[in-house]
Image (cartoon, rainbow, N blue to C red; front, side, top):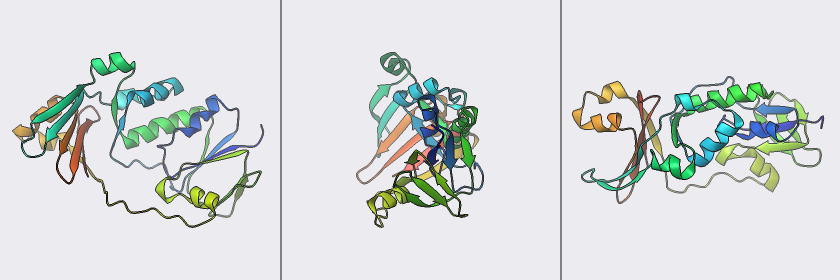
Amino acid sequence: MDSPLLLRSPSWDTKLPFLKRRLNFPRWHFTSHRANIKVGAGIQIPPNSSRLLKRWGVELEKDCVNPIGFFLRGYKTGSVLSEVNLVPEGVSKYGYPYWHAHRADFHRALLERAFQLGVQVHTDSRVIDVDFNYPPRVTVARGEVYTAELVIGCDGIKSLCREALQGRVNPPRATGDMAYRIVVAAEAMKRHEELHEFLENPAINFWIGPDGHAVCYPLRDGSLYNIVLL
């Protein structure tokens, strides 16, 4: 087909550019970012996802941490209540590894592979309208209109594509849940002896409390420590 496959997303978390391997379309990707920014915190990539990334040829493993397991801890004492082994039992069971990655590294690896596959990335191209009538059309803030055979919207909870499809305003709904993220330099943690085990034994640690929990794990060969408070 001569018409393009359009991808609309605010970040490179989407893996959809790799549909090229199955669909012989020209491909355009639109993002509102003015450049390919390097921001974010950690992301967990389970075996079902690492399997696909390997299949698609995404070079990410060298930037990942392989956690030895999950450790569920009590919030009062930090004692381990339950654990699940990931190395080697997880790899043996599922056939592929469980990874921790920094989102900026994940974005970079996806972007590099997308370029290799011929995806055209349009930065500073905020989508302001999507017409789902055939052939579908996408309008960006600068006024350009793009026509395609297929439009795929990956634009998150503030989705313009969802509102265009439903024909009404549909903003995100508050759930009462909020995640606060921080990335700490491992060097700063080394000054505290009680934190050494979390650096020496790379794992996913959960502290579970009555009204919240924390999820923590290392990134980038253990040089960073990702903390999520919920």
